[in-house]
Length: 293
Image 1 (cartoon, rainbow, N blue to C red):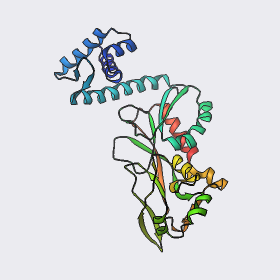
Image 2: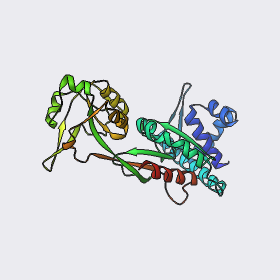
Image 3: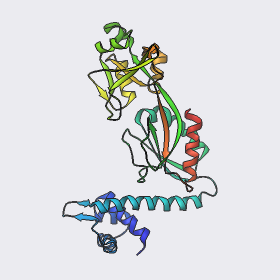
Image 4: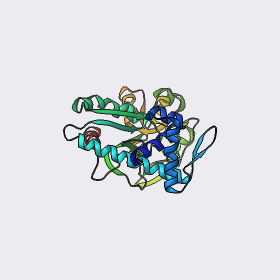
């Protein structure tokens, strides 16, 4: 049995949810796909898939095998691509970026990248969900804030300062907060990320402190919070990149800057490192580091 082919078949069955769907994609009959999976299970001596008339479900051993299969297939693809990349970098490059940062900062750079590297196909997905780079769901992911311990390689691309803003209309109606504690009387619009601290940081007289704020709306990206603030809904604290245009136009006003504690969030590109990093990944990260700082 071709081991690489077997891994490909198993991953396709899990991704597509059935033997018949995997067979259609791979050009095999459902019975041939089923036999491939049976042979893997017989060789390993464990059950990888629980079969029913309605669905397939992974066992714990199946989940571990799937993770290994995806890594092996990605390594094989990268190795073959490296050989093909002896000239210009080429191949599909899967990129994951956050919604607001991707739309405002990354996507505007892609035209120039495509002109420099016409043989690379950039496959970009904008989402605030964390994709599993180690499992092969993306080649490069752009992440904000502290990074968890992992086997991935990270390269710093820059950082973004965070700012508290509100619209002139809102401030005319509700009043301008002069001290951080004044925010307790304001509608503070915040992120709904579990990883985000439920407080806003400040500094007064060289002493750092935090303030627990409340509001009527939470969102998963700074662009949405900035839009709500621009509409006069409330006060928000977001990355400068997501509201730079509104601040420049006067549609949003920075607040409490004298109390800003140097509030910044680092931005990294994360990827599977090592000696066999594909050329398309290397040149893309170099390009981001050059243009995002």
